Length: 220
Image (cartoon, rainbow, N blue to C red; front, side, top):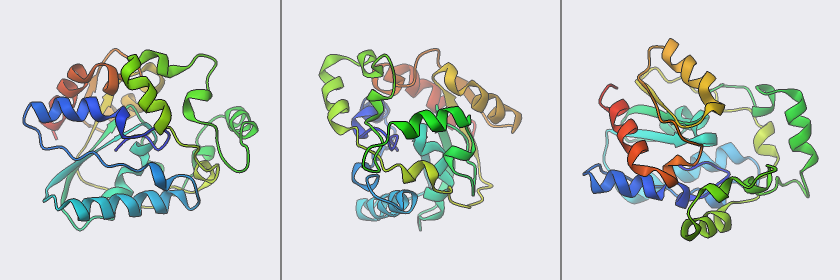
């Protein structure tokens, strides 16, 4: 699953790399579910519908990048299909019953809230002084920029689903931003792989990320 702040093109190079190596992959498009509240409910419902429509059989391993990571237990809980494991790709870990704004520095919450217009956050690439999409090759950059939605501010205020997951989990770290999450995953006994890259490495270094992901999958 791609980040709710991006679109499926951000994960397509990784999906293609895995598929070329014989891994069965389904890349779900969740773009149209994030512009109105309740965002978590809409995201999870759209994901479950997409899996049902695809006809894929389990067991599945769910992989969530960035903001999709904390929702993985909710995604798994919504499926009739068996889920064998969850892998968090450069993301926070789940915080059931707590909203994003409850888990970060209040100064960051104020900064993000100040950018809200008509109840919507700016596109993710406009959150930073330096455009993060410049890391992506030009032929993919435009597609990722076009896909990036204006996410409802409510998404960051909504409590994350209160769902318990006691199955296997793994973690793939791409950037220093999520080092604490990777450390926490290791302390929980999860398999963890680190790729020295950046948050969008699934798009720019799919071979390295695929290798790390397969290493984690082999240890679930």
